[in-house]
Length: 143
Image (cartoon, rainbow, N blue to C red; front, side, top):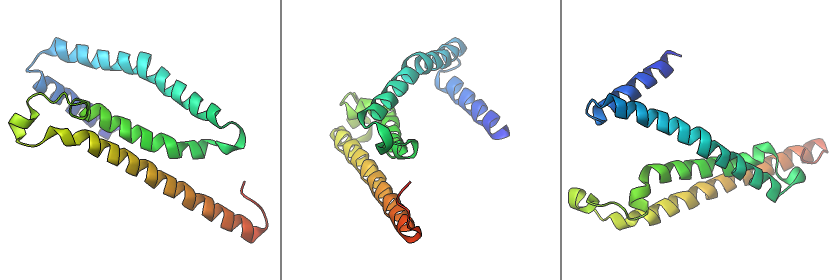
């Protein structure tokens, strides 16, 4: 609990520092972020989860297997949310300020996303193999 309170305090401090003391702007930003999350993003999360579950009904998609899609998708979307101006080529003065090429972000984000899903698929395959071996040793199939 103290760590959570410290993180809120640090976030508030950073927000106030970034907005040059515009307390009303900070409050509006936090409230807007909460409203956007609760009224827009949570229904989208639920809709995507329902679509994923209905794509393969029955025993094919159990909750623990869905996580092998949820986790890489979540990490990829967080990376996109943080870097979307550069991924979409809306970097503006990025090249002038950093002397770096802003055109590499889309390819790198796609590569990271593909790597995340590939690693997740390997983890799922390893788990399925381990479950099969354990089921074969006891005479039972995968549960």
